[in-house]
Amino acid sequence: MDNTVTNTNQMDLTGPGLVEPCEADHHGKGTNSQDDDTQNIDQCGEGNIGKDRDQTMEDSADEGPTQVNPQTKKDLAGVSPVIRFYEGDNIQGRTLEEVLEWSDTKLEYTHDFIQILFPIPERSNFMLHPAATLDEKTMEAFQNNPGLRASMRRALARMLNFFGFDYQIVNFDTDNATIDQRLCHIVPNPEKFPRAARNWMNSHNDLRITRIIRCLRCCGMDVEAREFYRALRNLHASRVGHPRRINDRTFMYWTRAAKRDLRIPPDMSDAEAERFGET
Image (cartoon, rainbow, N blue to C red):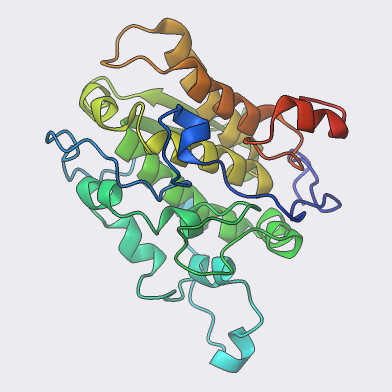
């Protein structure tokens, strides 16, 4: 495991009764939807934010996506569908490569892909595959496998592009640094971000962001999680330069996803979280 990531191997993240935060908890809109279940999406035309799929992550070639493992279906039967998906397998009708090629419009209006693209320990009611959650074995696989993390970085780059952010990898002082020893830089793209933000701010995409931050941390990608949260914190603090204001309740969930002990899901109340010694 990389020295720079938090060791979550000994954490029980799959306790009974833990479910994904619901739309009502996250936005106070009174719906019963969970994660990407909501169909209450802006229909005024802002959902079509273009089909520009530029990948701004320049160094992904250092560790290309993992290739399909030539195992039999019997061999794969006991392998997590999350790992199979990130190794190139077709999980219920789609592959990672296909999702990465989707238009922004398709990413906006498809609701059963984010759960396997960025899995978390809590189950979702709107899930592509019933077993697409992060258990300790799956988290350990990502933490110990640079190829799996490289593939997830490609997924992160695509979603950041969808949100209107630029995503770049920046070397440390040495040219010999591995991709896990590099800094990343996530900033709003001045041309894409204003239009993209009109679509995702204060929508079901707020929940997607909570999920992404939590997933990155669970999978040993703390650098990316911290940088994404930093970019969001700057947006929340500035409250200018973008078309919509990030509400305080949404930002609270992002903060919980970025900072809480990984045993504690973002939707758990502070009173309940006190059992773990922190809020």
